[in-house]
Length: 451
Image (cartoon, rainbow, N blue to C red):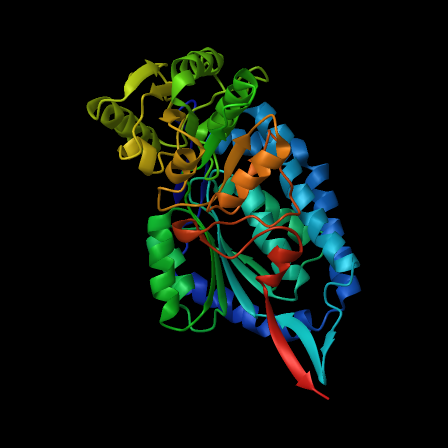
């Protein structure tokens, strides 16, 4: 059995059965058998199913939010405002794409070009946005006519159980969807390596993504990867510095700092570095670690003791490399729970580990730049390219800079997140896209029929 530990209380709040390679094989075998009938379902029937899933998740929003807060420590207010509404929006974005005729054939010369399902999809999802990432894979896979075997993170399996109950309640047949709990080295690798799995959609660390790619290559599977990030918030010299820094701190600290697209590097003009650092410290000081079940809490714990220790290790490394510790540090802010003190570093150089490597915790690096070209160079200087931001008083200037950033998403002046726009990364942040019609495309094969 796998014990689920509440990271706030350090107490066991549930258990799930650890799957085996045999369980994986049984699930894949059921999926293969279910695929012919399921893939023949009409687009209108899939549309109705997707809308039913979205409505059912929304109806159980409080239950989903409370479950995520208990098993992975996300603040209940953030869970209620983001962790549940985003998946509902993603599902409805898929429904909109179906309603717009996404699967209508296209004619190119004398060819009819069709989109057809890939087949058996292995979906492997993380713990930090558990519901969002499961919905972002399972729903478009279903919409395209695929069958799915899901392996959620062993750190957040209770949310997966809840989603499974929703899927069965709205009428998804057994075999079309299967849930296998377990660890990556056992269940994850068995799924990725299985010869009857046609596609792997994986969200997780870049290190694990490399392993998934290597294993899937043995059977030439389609692979979609959403991996790590080290996103830059680039504040131009004409921007409202106070507003840009405050919004940036909120983004860097969202979900307790455990977000792959978080703006963990704050790039500011060198002449205003100290001013920006002061604003960042004042804003970050309001993220006081506390019980995430309380509506007033903005900063909960790291998901596990191991994750807390990883983040603390990076904080200690930042200090040792000479960055200026302006707030926080490696000390435990509370006696119980896997909490990390919200931390802000100043005078961070691009070559430092805290500026290059994904920390996945509430650690913000304030970095000075000389001019606009220098800022773009620093922003593009990591192995990642997932998210980012540009702030400027001139929207056209901000757009021009955004186009120079080698990253999959850029928000200008704090623009809202869009659950129908393509989400994914450049370079070692992964390949493929999720959400909306672009997310649907990942789960389809193209067929040309010459007439």
